[in-house]
Each structure stands twice: as C-alpha cells, then as structure tokens.
Image 1 (tube, rainbow, N blue to C red):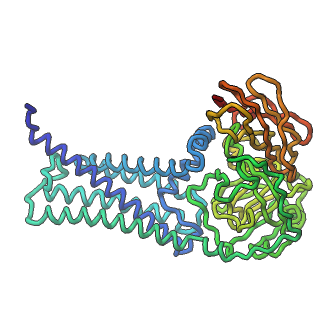
Image 2: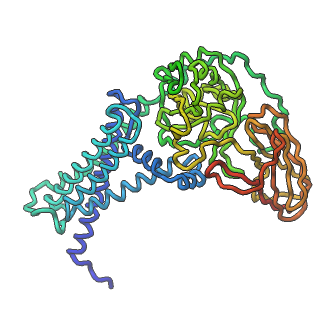
Image 3: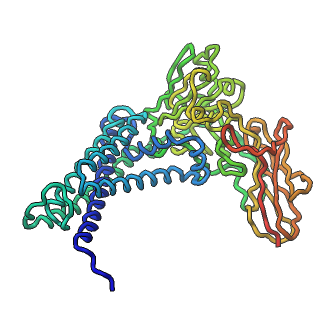
Length: 532
C-alpha cells in the first residue's frame, strides 16, 4: 500500500506547479505586449515591426556560426526559420517556468532572471536595422510587462494562501474571504488577455504590415523585346521530371529573414552611391518606366549539396543593371557592389561581373508574375554565373560602389569565399534514390547546370561501368540549366547510377568531393536503385 504524501511535501509540489504556471503566464503576457508594441511602433512610423521574439531569433541567426547555419539549412530546408522560432519559444517557456518556481522563495532573484531575459530581447532588438521606436520600444514594453505580471501574481497568490504555499515571500497573513476566487479570476483574465492581445496584435500587424494589396496593384510593363515561348524540346517527356521553369510556389528560398520583409513599392527607393561620380536614387515607378528585359536564369544557392534541391530556373523581368552603374559613373578602383537588403543583409558582388556584358538585372517579375514577396518584392538583384550569396540580393534598397579590401558582405564575414562563381553540377531526379523498379528499359533523367558557361554534355554511369552519353534536351541559354535523359536497359539487382556533365567551355565536372563551405559543393551525384 502506497504511503500517503506528507502534507508539507504535497503543498511544496503544488506551490511549485503554481509558480511555474505563473511564470508561463508572465511570459505569455510579455510576448503579447511585445507584439502589441511592434504594431504600435509601425503606427508611429517605424519602417518595420520588431517583435521581441523575432528580434531574438534574428540575433541568434547573426551569432550562429556558418557551419551551424549549414546544418540547419541541410536538415530543415526552407523550414529552418520555423524551427528556430520554435526553439526561441521553447527557451522562453523553460526560463519563464524556472523564474516562476524561483519566485516562490526568492522573488528578487526571479525578478532579476526575468529582467535579464528581457534585457536579451532589448539588446537583440537594438541590433536590428529598424528606425524609430521599432528598435527598442516593443522589447522594453515586453520586459516590463513580464516582470510586473510575475511579481504581482506571485505576491498575490501567496497573500491569498490559495494553495497553502510553503516558504512564501514575506508573511502569508490572514486570508480574506473571496481572495482565492479573485486570484483565480486574475489568472484566467491574465491568460485570456495574453491570448487575445497576442493574437489581436498579430492580426493587426498582418493587416497593416502587408504589401499583398500593393503587390496585386502593380501593373507590369512588357519587356522592350519579349522573349518567345520556349519549344517543348527543352523538357524531356519523362514522368515526374520537374518542369523546365520552376513554378514560383516551388522555387527554393534560403535567406536569414525570420519574417518576410514587407516593402511598400510606393515607398521603395534604390540608392546608388559610393565610389561613383553621380550618385542618385531610383523609385519603383522610375524602375518600371525603364526599358525592361526578360532573361531566363537558373539561380543556385551555395548551400546546395550534391544532388540538393536549392536550384531553380525562372524567366525574370527587370531593368538592366549595367546602364545604371554607367549612369552613376563608377570610379577607377571600385571592384565591389555592396548591396543592402531592406532587412539589413549585405552582399558583395564583383563590379566586373555586372559590366562584362552578362544580363545582370534588377528583377521585378518572375515567371510572368510580379515578384513574390518571399523572393524579394518589389525588387531583387540577379547576376548570372554567381551563387546567390554574392549576387542575388532580395528586397534590395542600396548599392554602394566600394572595394573588396574595404568592405565585406555578411556571408563573407561568416567564412564564405569572397568570389563565388557557380560550379558545374548535375543531378539525377528520376528515378528517386532507393526506388524499386522492374527490369527493362528505365528512363533516367535530371538536370545539369554551369551558369553562364552552359552545358555541352551529360554522361551516366551504371555501377563501375563505362560512362554513357545521355540525351540532352534543347538548350535555352548558357545561363539556364539543361535537362537530360537516358534510356537505361536495367537488369536485375541493386545498382548505383552516377551522373556528370561537361560545361560549355569543354571542362568536365570535377569528381573531387567538397562540402558547400566555403564556395560551393563539388562531386558527382549518385543514387541507388533495386531492379526486380
């Protein structure tokens, strides 16, 4: 027969439970007040909301070493930001429970813990490139609210002697009639207020800080020389092989923005300055009045592993970048364009890569649609032949002509290479690795790319056998990927299929295996299949 619990131990367990719950409520109020403060800050003129949880998440991204960012991208893909925010919320919950339990005996220490955690949020908020109240106002409100609620509910619960608290702060005193009821109502009201306030503030922010209506109102001009529709021959008729142009909704997204910047095109302005003779600014209306060009371009992330998904192909519409640089008058010695995003991200691009004749552009549309918000609306930069981290700035608002010796973009500061031309790569998409298939003719297919050099040939190897030439689909431009297929006479057993390609200069893809850091992965992509 189980021995009954000691009354004092049971009371202590109960009071710790209450303390943890109070800590969680205090944190919930802090998060809700932070969201409310972010909404108010936008109304007061901040360029973007800066809710404390998001600010802490962005600060964590800034402090995370490059190798750990790579692990997150590799394991979570485009869900890495959701995983990070979940981690921030879990951390807040754990610390708040600890603070609530600690407050039952050591209220001053618990207050200090809550205040210190609030200070982290304030510091994180101040590191974000947001003007006005957006930098510190929401975090300060959130920190104060958390401390006030934690102290108030802790003291109230002990004075009410609701659960027979052990080791209460100060004398418990005589409980007055109705104290327990009022305290429970206070707990319920605090929780309901946090829920309603947080959700209401987020809804307010989503309605006020939302450029979807402005994006929908954009009327895209036609290109000065529209590109013709591509022939069907650019895409092999192979089931499950992705289309030649990647649909916008499926196009990969890799960036450090926890919340997608909402940039009103009516307020957007691009500043071109630095080592130039004639600095100037361009509005979105100015940009749309320029002669716009269409260009098909395959965009690749340097974090793409061998056979990885971070590569997409699209038809872009935008203003050529080279004429704008010539209009500004680039001075001798300027070898870098340091572009800055609305959210503060900086990217360094070689000036030569924009002025050497390639179709570098300020893109405003993607696959016939106004640029999606998550892909940089209202404007992003694109330079063929370079990985995105040194060329494809989203939400771009500033182009400074400078030197590589003087300034470094964000990713270079994280240990990535300063110069990063896209490496020759190829991938097997069909069949998928691990597939079980029947013996007979099986079509193997995929894509190959060597941006700005083009693809001249693709070969497939079965197990350790000879390399066999694959059939190339029609070529679009050297700046796009090229799809391929191979009719494989498959025999029973387990087999390894490997692919390699030769670029437009006649250079064979290297078999040397290299990780993505510091300038892109290399090696051959292989899959394993079972033939029955």
